[in-house]
Amino acid sequence: MAKSSTSIRIDDNIKKQAMEMFEKLGIDLSAAINMFLVQSILTGGLPFPVTLPSVPRRINVDAMTSNELQEKLQRGYNDVDLGNTKPASEVFNQFRERHK
Image (cartoon, rainbow, N blue to C red):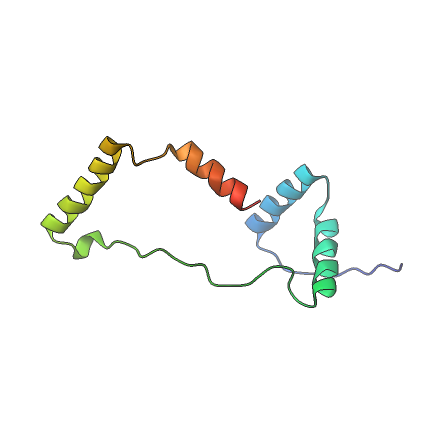
């Protein structure tokens, strides 16, 4: 199979992170890009869904009254007291498992 060279522009930081990750997988950037292109051809499009992330509703502390803020903080403290919390390590492990 004949090979050709292609020039693409990639953010330096993204490229560095990707190369480090692919190295751990035992492949180089060129092989990873070829894999992406082959999968794109096989699937007839991008080989993964492209969607906007669902962003949780952000809390605007500046827009809250002092009472509203105190109520939210108290609910958080109550959750801790009632054991309705998980260690961050457990939450991150669950996240990693779901997004392998």
